[in-house]
Structure formats: C-alpha cells, structure tokens
Image (cartoon, rainbow, N blue to C red; front, side):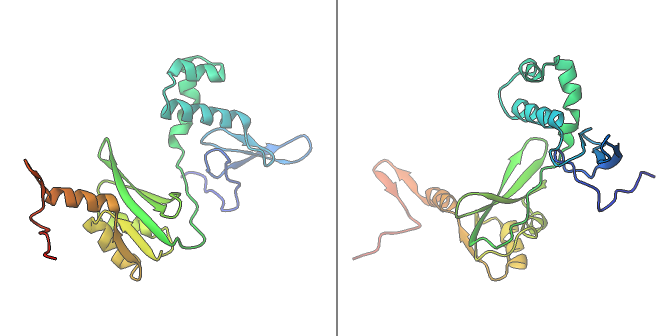
Amino acid sequence: MGRRKSSKARLCTICGEPMRKNGTTSSGRQRWRCMRCRASSAGDGGNARGAAEFRAFLVWATGRMTLAQAAATLGVSPRTFIRRIQWCWHVKPGMPRPTSPCSAVEADGTYVPYGWCLLVAIDAADGTPVAFQWCDTESRAAYARLFSKLPAPRALVTDGGAGCAAAAADAWKDARIQRGLNDKMCVLFRRVEVTSSGLACPAFPDSES
C-alpha cells in the first residue's frame, strides 16, 4: 500500500500534487519534493527547472515548434527533452470555482478525437471559461457534472441539446434557458427553401398587412 498523503502537505506549484517532506536546508527550513514532477522547494518560489520544462512542453504541445526546436529551448537533445517532460502529460488542469454566480452562462460541447467530448461553461458577459468537464457524449449526466461546479446563474445560453436542458432543469431550476443566436440561425436556414427566384420560407408565410 502506498504512503498516505497528508491533507496538510504543501501542493506543488508546478503540477498541483501534494508534496512530501524531503529533509531540511542548511538553515533548517523544511524542504519539499513532488514525486510526480520532481520539483523541489524550500520556499514559496517553486522550482525553476520544473517551470521551464512545463513552459517548453506547452509551447511544443500546443504550437508549431518541432521537437528539436523545443529541446533546444532547454539546451538538451530531443531524447532528453521527451524524458524530462514525461511528467507534464499527467498534470490535471484545474479551474477555481467562482465565488459568485454569473448573470448568464453559455455551455456547449466540443468533440475531439478518440471518443472524447469537452464540455465548457463560460461567463456570457466576458467569455471567460468558468468550468469544464470531459465526457464521451453530451448527456444529461455529463452536463449535470459540469453544472455542479457552478452556482446557479440567472440564465443559461445553450444550443438546445436535450441533455443540457434536462441537466439545467435539475440543477438550476430558476435559471432561464435561452437558445444561442448561432443555433437559431442554423435552424432558420434549415427551414428556408432556396428557389430560383430567391428565398422562400414555407414555414414562415408572409403575413397580410
């Protein structure tokens, strides 16, 4: 059985994992070490090497930099670079829970390769992400998990998916549900018939004046 992690352990400033005591400095200060990313710290400044590795990893993984170019930023070979950033793949991104409810929240899902879907909730006022949830499909349960991370807003903007609406009805009973403008336009264009003489809209006949 592995060693139990203390709830009072210092959290790693690089990957967020609880650190372990690792002796003391010559001045008697407690030294801490993260067993995941190997960061070592005796103060509040974190670990410069771990921070540099993580920055290089992010630039390489999300940008156009080649492996050789990324390795050069750390002054190492590509083989050494791969070994040194191995821990970065295991860092779980976190997002602090908002302390006050948003006036309106926009929620939607984006499907990515390998069967995953990322649900994201943003503050409709400024577009700031406030919560996210990984899932395999935009189900009621998945959206319920997303909404559980947020205080109830006054309104929810959604694409009209059944899973999202059902979860909102359970978690945010008093929130108004509003269809997004882009979704409304898509529905409108699906119902508009394009003819040789222009646009005809059988579903929305012209009203007599």
